[in-house]
Image 1 (cartoon, protein in one colour):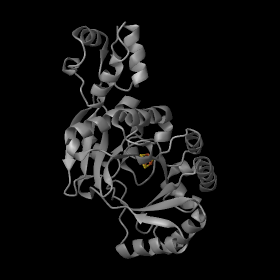
Image 2 (image 1 turned 30 degrees about the vertical axis):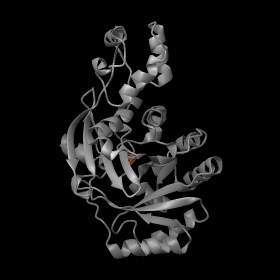
Image 3 (image 1 turned 180 degrees about the vertical axis):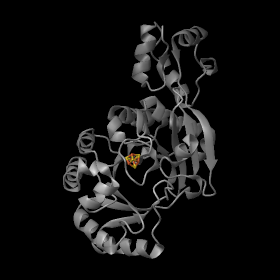
Image 4 (image 1 turned 90 degrees about the vertical axis):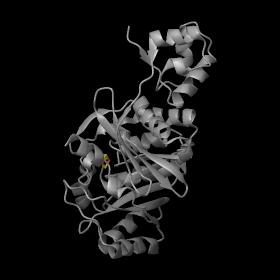
Length: 341
Ligand code: SF4
């Protein structure tokens, strides 16, 4: 008989499992607490009776990702590469901000979306991550760094398109909320613009932040940078974003990675302002992490400031994302690439 993996189960699901095995249901909360603390050995669950531990050892296990690489940068960004049970690898990043500590988690092994500035997509999408594998990235990082670096925020912005793995991602967010006490308002899900997923998320009734990677103000340019635009072009995408805002009353973040000579001119800034005018939104300008394989460079400081000012003049809320971990391959998918090369 195959053992059942308890990591990834809610308290209610663990309750059902132990009740079926004639154990008292209140034990489920204790087991869940141990799992969330990163304990995977039943013998260490000292508040459980011996018989229960024995039953658990016979019928269940607690899955764990293994840290195979860890790189820390001077700005206290820490990048992790995790080995999965099937020998695939995914990466996650820990970042320190003024408002707290955040982790960036992966949702798939690789990605099939083909964004040209992204290293994660180079080998395509291998598979979706299970909700426990998404949850465990956070557990392992928290355990590795200790409570002194308590994780307060998270973004699903590592490798993968989260809305292509909808159920597992939403399941993981609910588990993290239940098990690690991180409020939904401190969670961000980043998409390249999967319209049906955005509409579904609008109806999910989860007060998380939606972040949409736009990166270009015209279909012609966006088709070149993000092939998903051929399926979900800008106009219907913005319509879906309006639907999301109407239902959730929440502000959307638009990500715009500035690439030298490609999408960073004042003309593009004006076009972007036109698209986003009067939308309840925020624009995050990102100085792109150079991707060796693609030959993209960062724009100079002056063009970044000009771009920002044009948006601000049109009343659009803009921030320039603090560039973290550039020295440690913190661009999406880059550590994994180096490991695979
Ligand atoms: S940027 Fe995101 S959606 Fe685009 S290829 Fe990379 S991981 Fe996929």
